[in-house]
Amino acid sequence: MSNKTDQKFIPFGKVLKSHGVHGELKFFLYNENSTILVNGVLIWIHLNNDFIPYKIISIRGDKNKIVKLENIDSKDDSILFFHKEFFISRDEFPDIKSDNFYLNDIIGFKVISENMDKGYIYDIFPPRS
Image (cartoon, rainbow, N blue to C red; front, side, top):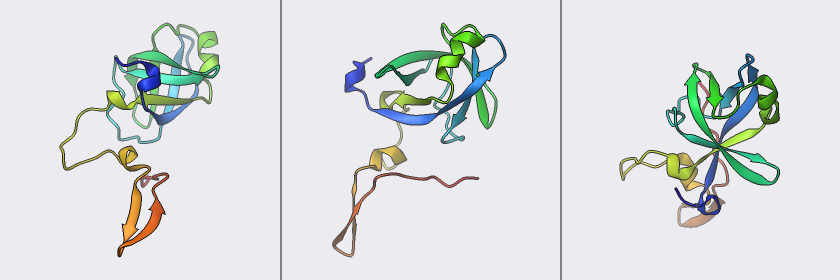
């Protein structure tokens, strides 16, 4: 794995609150249809001016996910994460066909229409179901 300073971190969701007494967390995903969050994936949380990695050891649920992170074993351990945004390294995204792309990869692209510069893509809001 590359050094964290070389990685591009993609905002992926927020930690809402704890779930139960064993340190599980309730996650809200920005893209509820994503299949990237699975056991073994590292998520990154911005704490104390640094990105800290945490390994997912279990995940369940549909819309809001219930997630267990490695070494977070009590409700007291989980309090630090409440309302924090979490990130996935772009390196964790699965490869896709060459004629497809991830939406986050086009952020920063210049928009040209009728041979005129219209601006840049600075954010994307996927449709909600």
